[in-house]
Amino acid sequence: MSNSGGGDRSADRGPDRGVARRGLMLVLSSPSGAGKTTISRALLEGDGNLTLSISVTTREKRPSEKDGVDYHFIDRAQFDAMAKAGDLLEHAEVFDNGYGTPRADVERALAAGRDVLFDIDWQGTQQLGEKMRDDLVSVFILPPSTEELERRLHSRAQDSDETVRARMATAADEMSHWREYDYIIVNRDIGESVRQARSILEAERLKRDRQVGLRNFVERLRRPQ
Ligand code: 5GP
Image 1 (tube, rainbow, N blue to C red):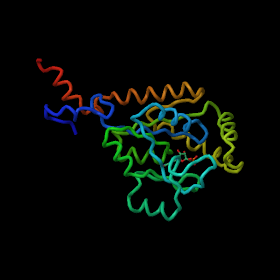
Image 2: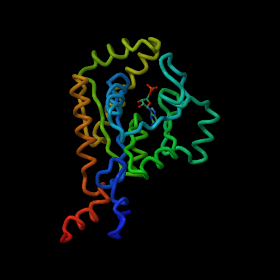
Image 3: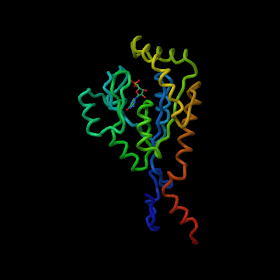
């Protein structure tokens, strides 16, 4: 992937004009209501090199959601067809609905040196890990307590009581997967959690192996003027 010639400097530069870098895949997972969506939004704001992977889902749209912004809302037949055609990088059933990551947008972004943020569950994270471990940085977000998780789910007030109950019941299951993640954030304070998530992203961007333009950059630094 690295550029072995010495002449073409632009090839050593990334979209942010620093040393060229391979894009990374930043996954945030948590039980519903732990604050993942708020953290994702904060990360995306003011970070021009991070783009959100917009999943497809067969679930009903919530009143506050927009098609093509929060999800691409599709029906089961479309979902099954995409899965069968290999158009989904990963897919899983969550609360009886299909969720999946469209492959093309992610591959395009990574190839251009952009980082991609994923709000997906542990099943999807496992699948990405099997296929693209070197590009994956995974973060699990835990709520500070069960009471707080329930309170947050109720205060969201977009789901029925029955849905909230179902989500509480599966939260314990989801949290059992914390060991499969690279980083764990306990979301006690949203500002602090956002700072922690930003630090993870910043450090991971600096990993030597991701900075594919380094070899040529250092060679030029060492060349006598
Ligand atoms: P919600 O219905 O609350 O938006 O999401 C339910 C769960 O599905 C969340 O844990 C969310 O992270 C997960 N999810 C959303 N999109 C995807 C996806 O594309 N793939 C997988 N595996 N999980 C997803």
